[in-house]
Length: 423
Length: 150
Image (cartoon, rainbow over all chains, first blue to last red):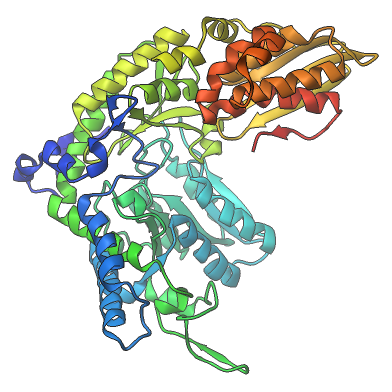
């Protein structure tokens, strides 16, 4: 695992740490003030979804109470205001991931929809019978199933890069999977079940040497790592707003404009056209070609506000803080007898998956909940990962910028309680 | 912790640690697989049915304490029962764990199985408690497909 010193180079100025005060951060998140079963809420299910800062909640409230209106249509004041705020959010996303053009940012529902969009639009156009698509063995179902559907339709083949016992991608095996029929690589930036940070820069380089485009599933990376899509040079990057302290129901597909231009629309409807007659329809320009129907306007605006919030806190500060917290949590959990951490890659962020000999994750989750601690138990929509480690499920604690060492201690105490009960 | 103690009663913890009838049944003439995709619990139920009476029953699989104990206690309860008696028992058990039963009446009827009354306070765990029963039902009906709780 990385040490905090390594992470400073991600983005942070060395002095930045002194300005990061987790207790002050916590005050920004109203939901954290409550008790569950009489105990202070310890929210450690951030890989599933993150909590929202007051600012984001206020932005949603402001939209609906002051300027709710449809976008890109009306000439009236409210519509103009809504359109401006919606498009402003798009610009914030562009800056956040360092995209070259604002029209490369497509608003979708979620990471899942972004991947489906690429599979159904890019994939159906360019993938033919006998072609191959490469994914990794630690993908979320949302980066497996859309490709399986495409492969089934086209008679194409899905190839899977294996991982080692630490949960790290085997790059040499990845290299071997390429052949002249390889059409696309689609891998996670960070594994949701294991926390592994994949070497995406290398993965992309290796694909580009063979002129193969790459989609990166960034659902688990954007809340933890600085992302620069131009530096990565990936063709597509997908992520969700709700894992980034924004609202649910809004996600982002970034695509290089040259590719997006040549892709057919994903859905037909309003806003994605520039003219319609019964004889012929001319599609709208990017990004609107891919945004059929009234979008999640409030959600996009809320996501823009979440990005503002992260800018204020500084993602570099967050990365350093979280890395220290994850190191601490790993240390503390490693001392618990019968507990085995699943996913011990050298480069990890955010996630601690574990199993306890003699106590099923589901039971552990129930005991923890009674202590006010929210974790996720189950297969984390990554059943192939569970099969790889020969476990039916894991318990997963995942941290965000508002979690504290005291919360990690509370987690450890509750795990001891569960062990006492079941073992 | 009181709800928790209600859920994980000593009998349940004991059956989880040492599940009874936890084996394949060599002379089984009925068998079915069950799966709870929510938590990954898997169970296979084996039955030897003779003249509509369960002569022997066993199970294999992996799951949480609730599903393991439920399967274990179920197998202990069923031997010698007819299909219609079992159907009535399952109905009563389901009512118990979903909190829809008149506790006093049903608990008498359910005997040992009444220890699962605490499940009703944990709606997400109902499927854990009923997985083995659904699978049993499938085995009795000779269903070939894996039973899913979803």
